[in-house]
Structures are given as C-alpha cells and as structure tokens.
Image: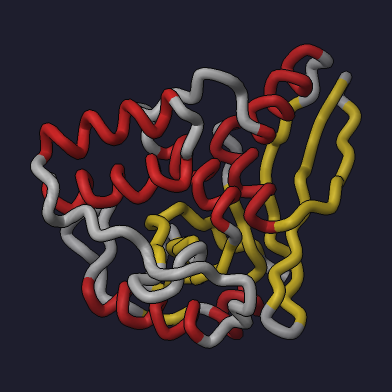
Length: 207
C-alpha cells in the first residue's frame, strides 16, 4: 500500500461544545483533508508546538518524552496513521536508536504531538485517505481554516460522543488585542493551556 504524506492544516474547536477539538491534516500533494477528533490536552500540546510564541514554564508530557528520548539518543523518524476502525485512527511511531529501528503503537494525537517536536514527517495509507478524507476549499492562509472547513468540522465534532463535555467556551471577541495578549501571558504563566490555546485562536483570527 502506498503512503501519502500529510501536513497539519490546523486545529478547530467547537463553538458549542467545550473541550471538543478536531485536528485537520492535509494531503501534501492533493486537496483532501483528514479530520481527527482529539482531546483537549492533546489539542493544547499540538497547538503549543505549532505556535512558537507559547512557551510553557515547565515541560508538558510530550516535551518530557522528547527530553527523555534526546537523553537516550532515541529519534522519532516518522509517524504513520496505519489503520481506521469504527472511526478511530491508529498510529505508529517509527523510532531509531543505535541504527536499530523500532515500531511503537501510539494514539494518533500523541503521535502527531511528538512528530512536531521531532520534526518528523506524518504519513497515512492511501486507502485510509480514500475512506476518511474530505474535499474542502483551501484557505488563502495556511494557518487558518475556512468557514466551510469550520462548519464541516463542527458537524464532525457534534457527531462524536461528548457525554463529559462542559459548558460552552468563553467569548473572547469582546476583548482588545492588548487584553488578549495579557490574558495569553497570564494563562501560560498559570499553566492554563486550554485557555491559552483559546486566546491564541482569537488572536490568530484577527491577524
């Protein structure tokens, strides 16, 4: 089976369901997108790795894994999303130490959070993209999602089981850019990364 390289298009959060996120992967040499519903913590970890402006005062779990791997000279060479069963994506970390390659099973959200930290490429198989990929118009900004994409992802999120979902997110649109930047700094200082990711999303929308 042939592998298809993917890149991260962005992270979308539900406007109506708190704690509900979707990671959007984009086909490098094509127009299809692969949306994957992920947890809040993993969304924050991926967002922090994407947004260099947010620097946690202490290492997050995925940062700790990266530091541990560096200390013992373990390298994540690539991530492969290799299976899709009942809407759940399964992934593998292709690692190497002393020229010996090992394959480690991982949740897709964790695998991608680590791929970002190791600058490792992300792949999936063509049959998975054929099955779960969707066609959406491309935004002029590589970092932002179009309204069409956000609408489709919102429907995808709402279709998931969200029994433990909390009330809707705080509306940050009423705050000035100065207020938002102060809130972002404070949220990072207090290690409230969910709030930091939300504030950063609002800042990104205005840029």
